[in-house]
Image (cartoon, rainbow, N blue to C red; front, top):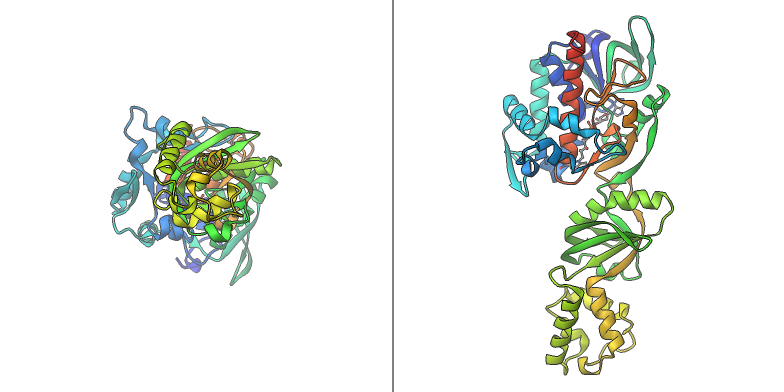
Length: 438
Ligand SMILES: Cc1cc2nc3c(=O)[nH]c(=O)nc-3n(C[C@H](O)[C@H](O)[C@H](O)COP(=O)(O)OP(=O)(O)OC[C@H]3O[C@@H](n4cnc5c(N)ncnc54)[C@H](O)[C@@H]3O)c2cc1C
């Protein structure tokens, strides 16, 4: 959209042409509100393009089958106010999202564990469809325009939005209502540098310390180079002070810095928060999830009994990934004696090996940071916002949507669902307010 075609005042200005801003813009325009978007990038939805490995996992329908879809869905979200997402998800959940995209001409399909994608399996289609929808509705987008400050006045216009533009230097836009859809701190290359937090804080809102969520974990182990690339199916548990605080099941992948894979990504927000509080965090891996500890001991003892003439190293071939064997032997204290036969193995070594199968513990040193994370845990404190409308309690007329708030979801389409749900909710709440219904 060409900037010269547009006015500098709009009823509603949306900062951020990411998932939540795009949803809010289309919804607000359909509800008759004069709307424009300000975006620091030169195109819309730069982050959306990278989602779901380029396929865009738009939502997840597996939680949409119970009697209260929103309640099922809300179990996938995290916030310092656990109940805060619920009314938003009730207003606009998975079914409404699927209908919304159908209406725009983007059919969705579910391909794995309820994860829904555009039928084309291309994230770019989602953006193409939004681009067409915004053009059809004549919604201007001011690209290459970074919001530096927001001035609120009691008179008219209420919001003065001070921007730095690439072509025109400093420009001020004004609006009656403002949506902050600036995202969090993840993948800063996509435009999310945390400046939305600064804007909100300057207007009096509290920031709950953001930490990376859905991110790989860095581990302290001398064996990472050897382990890198090995995958196994099992449990990952996060332990603090010896207590399990979250467990996840799935394919764990060792990397040269630590661990990745779906269960690790799911565990990461808990680990990040605990590390942020200076706690000692342990990742405990269970490589034999189908057996109890006693069953592992029985199984391996029987196995070693049958193959007593084999070396311990050879006895483990076919039971664990071969690359793991020399590391497990070292971890069990056998590095001096790699040719030890099973029949000569001490009880102490047997016990150590069995223990490693069920509880292989690693010290978590860090996460892989915001540049590699998929979401930001923490953000603008939801206690500063009205439940169900997402309007600021401190600055009437200012609304929040998406990751900028202290709400984050699990892996599997839940973060985009939050962006769709909150963008839609804020826009409908504003339309109701303008119509005098609120
Ligand atoms: C690699 C990766 C893969 C992901 N995959 C998935 C997935 O498959 N499914 C899923 O549900 N979630 C996924 N996510 C998470 C999901 O993309 C985000 O939760 C979602 O995009 C958040 O939407 P948002 O509108 O809040 O912010 P964003 O989409 O991040 O958009 C914010 C926009 O605001 C703009 N902006 C910020 N500050 C300013 C400013 N001061 N002035 C002007 N513009 C500004 C930014 O440039 C950006 O375009 C993934 C994230 C990453 C990084």
